[in-house]
Length: 321
Image 1 (cartoon, rainbow, N blue to C red):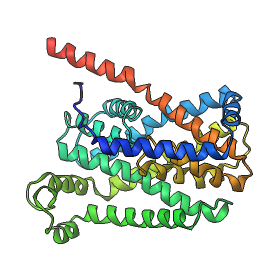
Image 2: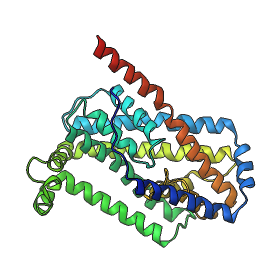
Image 3: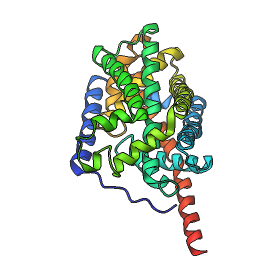
Image 4: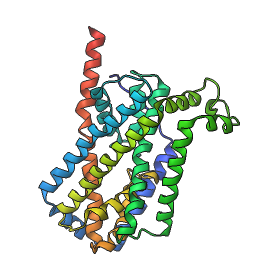
C-alpha cells in the first residue's frame, strides 16, 4: 500500500464545517451546565463502553463483506481480507478528515490498485448507499411504534431521502434511463461515451440487482450492530431505553453526517436532547451520550492506523525485493 495522495479540501469548506460544529456546541452548552455533562461521562461503565467499541470495530468486517458482494457482482475479484484492510484504513482517515465520507475517497484511491477506477468508485458509492437506504427505511418502519418525535421537517426529510435513494438505485442499476435523460450533461459528467461518469454507471449496472439486494440485506445486519453499539453506550451511562427507540433515533444521528461539520459534532448534540425527550432522558445525559459515541467512534477509527502502517511497510518491502 502506497501513501495515498488526497485532494486538498477548500479552506472555506473546512471553515464552514468547523464553524457549524462550534456554533452547535455553543448553543448546546448555553442551555446546560458542562459540569453535568462531564459528570455523566466520568461515571460511564467501562464494560458497556468496551462492548460498544468492539461492536464498532467488528462492524468493519461486515461492511467489507457487503463491499465484496458488490465487487463480485461487477465481476471483480478482490480478497475479503484486502477489502477489510481498506475499510480499516478508510475508517482511520475518517478520524482526521472533517467529513464522515472522507474515508470513502481513500477506499476508492486504494481500491483502484486492484480494480479499475470506475469499478472502485461505483461499488464504494453503492456500498455507502446501501447502508443509508436501510437506515432510512428502518427508521420509517420504527417511528409509528415509538415515542420519537424529531419534528415534521426531519421526518419528511428522512421519508423523502428513503424514497429518492431507492428510486436512484433503481435508475442507476437500469442504466438506460440515465443514459437517455442525462445526455445534456457536460463531457466528464455525461453518462454517454467513455468518460469517467459513463464508466462508473456501467460499473454500477454491472453489479446487478442480486448483488445490490445482498448488500441491502447485509446493511440490515450492520444497522442492527450500529443501533446495538449506541444502546451499549447508553447502558454505560445508566440509560434504560428500549432497543426499538434507538432504532428510530440512530438514523437521524446518521443524517447529521450530511450537515457540514466535523463528523456531525455539534449538530447531533443539538438534536439529541429533543430526540431522547420521549424516553425521559435528561438533556445533559443525552448530550453526554452523543459526545461519548463521537469519542468511541474516533477511538475505533484509530485501530486503522497500524493496518495502514503495515500496508505501507509491506508495499515498501515488495518494491525493494
